Amino acid sequence: MRETRGEAVECLVIRSAGSSGSHTYVRALGQVQIRLAAHIDVGNGNPDLSRPSYTRRMKSLEAKRCTVMGLGRFGGGLGVTRWLVDQGCIVCVTDQAPPEALADSLAPLRKDIDQGRVHLKLGGHDPEDFIQTDLVIANPAVPRPWENPCLHAARDHGVHITTEIRLLVERLDRDRVIGVTGTNGKSTTTTMIHHILTHAGLDAKLGGNIGGSLLPLVHTFTEDTWIILELSSAMLYWLGDERSDQGWSPGTSVLTNVAPNHIDWHGTESHYRQCKDNITRWQQNGENALRGDHVSTRANPIPMQLPGTHNQANAHLAVMAATRATGVAPEIAAAALADFPGLPHRLEAIGDQARFFNDSKSTTPEATVLAVEAFSPLRSRVHLIAGGYDKGVSLKSIADLSRHIGGLYTIGTTGAALAEQSAGTVVACGDLENAVDEAFRRMGPEDVLLLSPGCASWDQFDHFEARGDAFRRLVLAQSGNCGSDRIAPTRSMSDPTP
Image 1 (cartoon, rainbow, N blue to C red):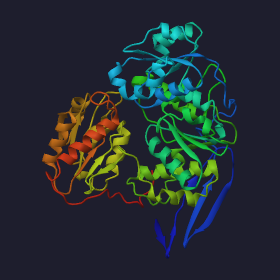
Image 2: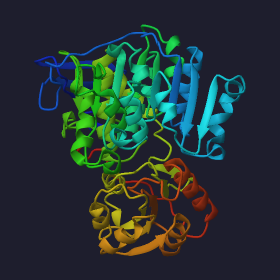
Image 3: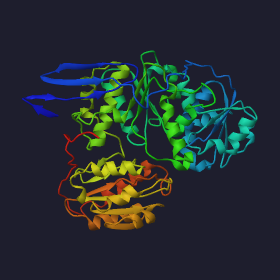
Image 4: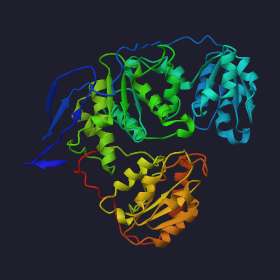
């Protein structure tokens, strides 16, 4: 915070749809006076208010035979399967992965499998399972679902197709849902909002693309419950319906930013952006539509443990959303982030030297650039490990970093091409173990090692958590093999927020 004549002053700009005018709130927080200005603005990117919205609270489920397409390993398929069984359905679970790869997800279903409530069709999909059923629940991870032959078969035979997230939101009071999407920063922003509401004493649940399925818990929600959902572009695809008015948007929407991503799933950048727009497409007049560019470049920083101006932008956006949606006082919301610990695999410090950072959740080039910038003005001491699964997006911005940092160590499917594009100190390492070895060999006692791949992990790891865990193990195993002087991110917290 900026000191002014002995008192701390912080400015936070909030913009929201559905109102006009300007208000300044000045409140006392101990002996600290915090001034917050809310500039209300309806601008580009807010919802088309002519589009209707709908809410179906506690909508009954008429289907009795259901096919779950994609159990997966992250909770969505498991959650919806258990919920369907609780509704009295007979469920066919089909997945392209073999049983041994799904052991952890199958274990909680063992009783239902043994009693005949859940049937398994693993190692591939049979179109008959999509025809001889009342309802298909598709996993959002299924790429280009409009081209999938099994889903085509379901449509051709009049079988309704939905998703776990759609089943959830149809049973929520959308006025009490805060939905967050964006190419970068959505996980951090979503978790910050949940952290703020929890610290304010509100009943807040975290779900969507983070934290597992909320569907099995929907019967426990009350009219006082707030739901904070991280929504991926694939989830938003399934929440939209351009052919009718049956799309869904949350009562409060947050769009952090949009940059090219997941072209492998969407096919085109245009389709990706259209799906992101679904977060506001079916909002109503007066509802909150917040964007990352609503954060003022003059906003004073919110005191936090997390480094980087991008995290300051996330924090201001989270405070905006919490304040506008729930009425929590802005200064209370901002103060709650002082002890926000951040997310695992998102600029996570490893060990006690503050020299090794796991940013495995960085799966876009923009996220990698932001991670490196968090260490300015000491970028020349950063040794960066980047590369991974090829999602079809340009990695030029990562390659350009090589001229300004201590070293770039490339891995994965994109590693060789990324190394060829780079002009600085670059080593094509192939895999993560070689990259850590090379970096430790070249690092000086005041250098920083940063894993921020800018790519998905699926070429060499099952998911980004596995990649980050592997990096953590490799770094800890190398303890003492390079200099030990303490160095932390030094990006000034008073730098303007982008």
